[in-house]
Every structure is written in C-alpha cells, then in structure tokens.
View 1 (cartoon, rainbow, N blue to C red):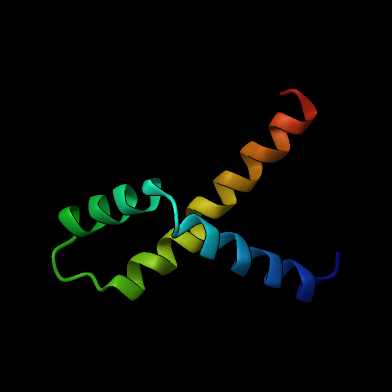
View 2 (view 1 turned 90 degrees about the horizontal axis):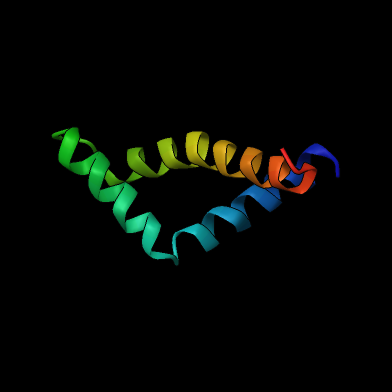
Length: 65
C-alpha cells in the first residue's frame, strides 16, 4: 500500500468508526473535558490519535502480541 492508498484507507476507517457507539463516547468525553472545543477539532484528535492506537492494536492482535 502506498501513502495515498493508506490515507484513503484511514479515511474509510474513520468514517466507519463514526458509525459505532464508541465514537459517541469518545466525542462526548472530549467535549465534556474541553470547553469550547469544536466537533471538527475533536474529529481531528480522534483521527490522529485513536486511529493510530486502533491500527496498532489490530496489528498487535494479528501478530499475537
């Protein structure tokens, strides 16, 4: 997978994440603990941080770590 394909994959992965209940929990946590934060900022933090963690967990699970 090249960089462009990776970015497309991450965008699809994020769109899927937004359809599950965990997204609402995480977004609510950010909103409740950061007065004045916008939904766009929250999504940026989720995309940059949680998807990295989620991807790492998936990779580790595949390796049996």
